Image 1 (cartoon, rainbow, N blue to C red):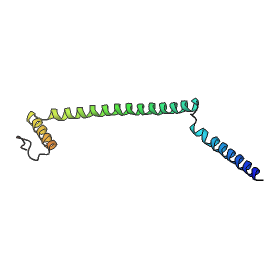
Image 2: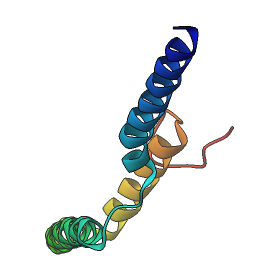
Image 3: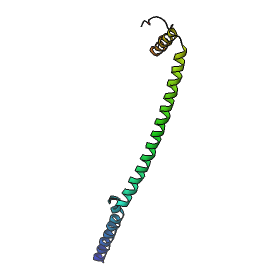
Image 4: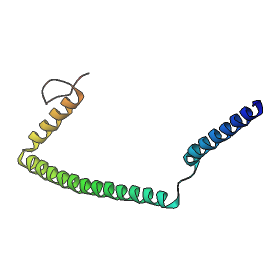
Length: 108
């Protein structure tokens, strides 16, 4: 009876090892070509969509820039020459963080 018990244990161990190998083996196997092709196609589609969005944004930004330039040209064209200088000095002072009038040199 002792030798039968050892045989049963050996058979059980072999069955368990086979079951573990059967479950774990597919995890380490490389995916088939069709799976890889599907993922590549999905990535390409997503990339194409993103490129289209970027191109649309580029067109809209260029349009906005063109409109802003036209507005600035009209605004600057309506100012007298001294007014343009005063506005540029005022903006430069704001950029530097210096408070005060537009005329004169800012001291730091």
